[in-house]
Image 1 (cartoon, rainbow, N blue to C red):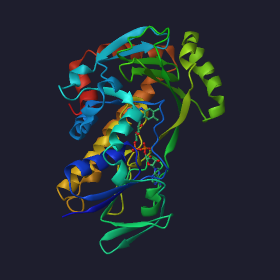
Image 2 (tube, rainbow, N blue to C red):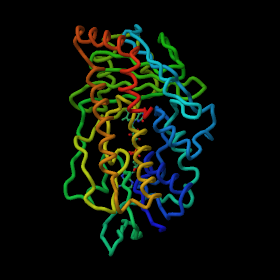
Image 3 (spheres, helix red, strand yellow):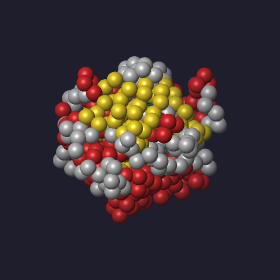
Image 4 (cartoon, rainbow, N blue to C red):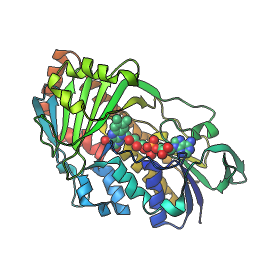
Length: 377
Ligand SMILES: Cc1cc2nc3c(=O)[nH]c(=O)nc-3n(C[C@H](O)[C@H](O)[C@H](O)COP(=O)(O)OP(=O)(O)OC[C@H]3O[C@@H](n4cnc5c(N)ncnc54)[C@H](O)[C@@H]3O)c2cc1C
């Protein structure tokens, strides 16, 4: 039976769900975005492993101009002095039509908005009130419009405001005592890296990730640093004290305009208490970025909701929470472990970790268990 769905939030999760519903079903839907436009900030790359690329290829991901994506085949591990530790072949998880892909977040959002922009996306929409009317949910927005729907899918990010309308208990995301610095580099500068690969440089209380985001060889750089407080005005000092003290030669890579984020994570996965309301993407669970799976999980969770909808199982026999939380726990434990292992400050621990890394990246069984399970390979 035809259903009506309100999707709250036009990030990667909400837009992916919208595209799947539009392409494969007759259900009615609308995406309600709080902001007045989509966030198409340039300085922000994203890695998509094959678990998400496989899903996106169903909505014609391959129509993105090939010049605007990259397919890195290897992760190169370095210490922060830029000395190589080992490498991991990522391409073994690829298939002919699903490859590990890197691109600008804005390229992904532009692609996801294309088919739904005019008819299915409304901006400047903030929920004012929700109520239940028979078997439906009535959403009132603060611009005095409303929508009566069968289902609400909240895709409004880690600080999900939609939760506060439907849940009595709300667990606030926690600050991980770390900050992310991001920028786009026009060249690999003086770094001794292969710019076609993902380069991961591990330092004390910090790590740096560099990867190509298009065929122009622009590189996305993310530097994660541990810090007790998030002080945006103090970032240059933090970079100096944490990263440049370990390797002054890295100064060049921080010269372009930088953007910073405090790192938050969801401490607990909480089910929806309303059968008509579902949480996807970061609104379901926010991960640390150390497995590069946040967007991937947003896409997967959207696909799970879409599958239940097409099988008419969203309001009965619904196992979304069990399946999603099982999956989220796997990703969360690996992201947390990576965060821990990437930042050792003791030289002894760093050496032990590097030895283990060298040994483990060549062990097929380990790689298949550790990453294959994440990439669903
Ligand atoms: C440093 C860093 C690096 C990362 N790198 C990667 C990576 O390489 N690969 C990867 O897979 N992931 C990565 N991620 C994670 C990834 O970016 C996020 O997990 C993903 O974008 C979450 O998508 P989302 O749609 O759930 O939420 P969001 O992107 O947060 O989108 C939520 C949307 O909802 C809107 N909204 C918010 N509140 C409301 C409201 N009340 N009403 C209506 N609309 C609302 C917002 O404006 C926004 O448009 C990284 C994250 C960080 C911090």
